[in-house]
Image 1 (cartoon, rainbow over the protein chains, first blue to last red):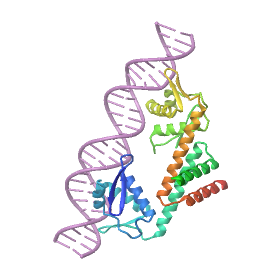
Image 2 (image 1 turned 90 degrees about the horizontal axis):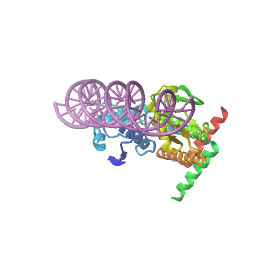
Image 3 (image 1 turned 60 degrees about the vertical axis):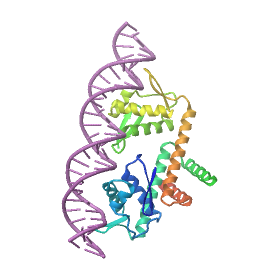
Image 4 (image 1 turned 180 degrees about the vertical axis):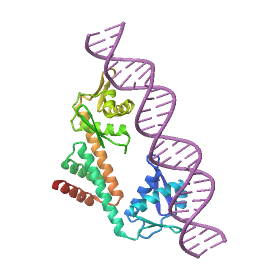
Length: 132
Length: 132
DNA sequence: TGAGTGTATCATATCACTTAATACACTTGC
DNA sequence: GCAAGTGTATTAAGTGATATGATACACTCA
């Protein structure tokens, strides 16, 4: 969980998962939360690779996935930019939220929990977070 | 997502995840849901391996994890049995539910969703499941 | 033209996972 | 005692995903 910076972005990388997956996930989150704005240029592959102390190929892998997500647009010779369409970002965010929620419910039901149990557990978690 | 049977148990195995993880997860669920009862003997490593068309080492790996979970007890020369303590099973179930819920919330918040959003998405998912 | 973009292609290395073949220690029933 | 059935350990081999390093290519812009 070492902290590494690239411009305004802060990354936390470890060896528990593929590096490109961690970069991808944290870029997605930064875009979804608006920490990087539509139209912004993100650090070049080589810049990012140096900042994260990672191979350029690994960064490129992550960037290509972002393009496939529709979150970025790459222009040869210029760089990779956040999409100028906020709607696309919001659509991605909504789709992802539904996917994550579905998976959560699927897993809970697989272990025999019903809707009431799920709601109770969420309420409990929220109460715990209030105390802190 | 091929279906394979071992006694009363039904397994769904694919190549998207480690086989031993899938066996482990589905055994945990079967125990948590009471599809196998406390004290029951589960199929021998070799039986299970043959039924699932998988290497005995792979099954053994999963069984050892179940022991570590406290869900099973292994007696050399006899076999592997579901723990006779229902409390242990329930405790495992509760712990797992909290872990899964925490992870769900962490992920949603990482993408900028708050408690209201989470509750709304859950309600939506529940409504969808009612229609079906 | 040169510096900076993303991309492609090798080769290499590592690691987790799976399989296979054997062997060993233990328990039970004949 | 013995044979059959338990879980377990060991060794070897193969596979696939991941990561690195080195290099080259196509493109854009000042």
